[in-house]
Image (cartoon, rainbow, N blue to C red):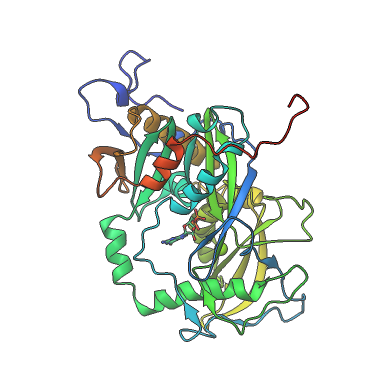
Length: 391
Ligand code: GDP
Ligand code: MG
């Protein structure tokens, strides 16, 4: 990473006393070599059911079941069932990290990595890391991340910005339908059982989710994060998670070179960041026509997405994304020093500016629930005592 305004060459601007600390996001500052990123491994999983209730198993996992390859291509009607067979999740409920914390509370005694691994880690959702990766290139939507340190671990939880809230509350009907269409595509492409067939006659209920919990490391930052997985491919060349997982996306049919360029520059960046983080090897795209039908499918291998912009001066660079994310994690670790689940540092970013920080205590920003703090402060429940040869 290039220097960003150091005094004697060793003291970063963000650490000099009496200056509001901030982190710049200009891509040019992060164009060094690709940083270390540990091969992501799955630690476990959980499911959320039709009522958004947590289950510590894979009951919501679905199975990749693409249509037989025909000369005409698929003809999925993504508008079918809207709005009568749509059960959208209640977006007014801010779940924060709760489901991931539920998993962590139940598995804290069996975590790999040795004693103290969790104390050095950052815990968050994959989607929050995706936003960090794309920040140097994002020109439209800002973000806010709340951060607390507890028992050494750094927790990051997104806060909805006022602009995002205003957009959600005034979402035009055609955007609501477009959101449905993305989920409807998943229903056309997935079966509930291995070897089964999709059933597009049922309801689309977006409360249901299967989440993978992963371990990785970016530079010297151990990571524990969870991400929603669309489906698993029983025929994948590498059948273990996360390499058996498939991400499903829809996008507008492209006709002109200009439409393709902008797809590679903006959409593929988001697809790459989201799937690269958990090590999901393929994104299967369905291209929809103006009438809302999927007319063709194309598989984009995650590790080949950068090739589409490698020679584009206005393209994105994976090194910039990962170096910025690493710099943010260092910045956050250096800012959130006090270990206190009620103390929150709010990191805020708007396009064109640096990441800034403000300090808060308790409501409304504190996000680690008392049930979690209390459980983590208790001794681990000891396993049932089995007689040993000495007894
Ligand atoms: P993604 O990468 O943005 O899809 O998000 P994650 O995979 O990290 O998902 C984290 C959790 O947030 C999962 O329980 C998802 O079901 C949920 N989630 C994903 N997108 C949204 C959203 O737009 N709004 C809300 N409220 N929850 C979401
Ligand atoms: Mg998807």
